[in-house]
Image (cartoon, rainbow, N blue to C red; front, side, top):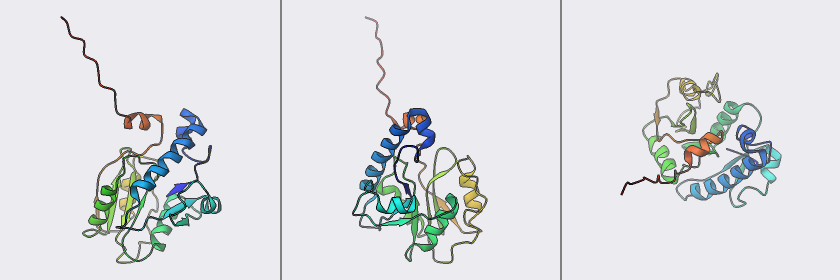
Length: 197
């Protein structure tokens, strides 16, 4: 799931800290890196874009990847619609703002769906960077109902909305909401230790 990386429209919390142009630039670079990393012959990578019309026509996304519009509604309504409308078989949604995501993480999510009905990739802040469904049966009508988005309860609420489907968890990664998240992802320079002679 991606938003078109325009200043003031994406990563606004980060933008309030580093500037809207800087936040949009970071997100544009992150999208390009994530698309390169996650494009893999083991699955079909489709960009779910917003806003719908601008996202479908945008030159800011890799042109070789298929796109679908996210549509209207809150985050939960858009994710549930994407999962319901995906081609037959297991499907997973990955957030666009997770610098640490690799092909191996997505492969683990699909492997988990061989044993469970649903899978989540927890984020450090109580949310999640990936959600997937086996889709062997109907997607629950309650999926993502009453989720407290952008809170420490988002993962717990989403699990509750599964209505009894068996779920599993894979790797915990950090998504980038603010400057502190970016700093936490930046490797620290080695410390210089002073030695007495």
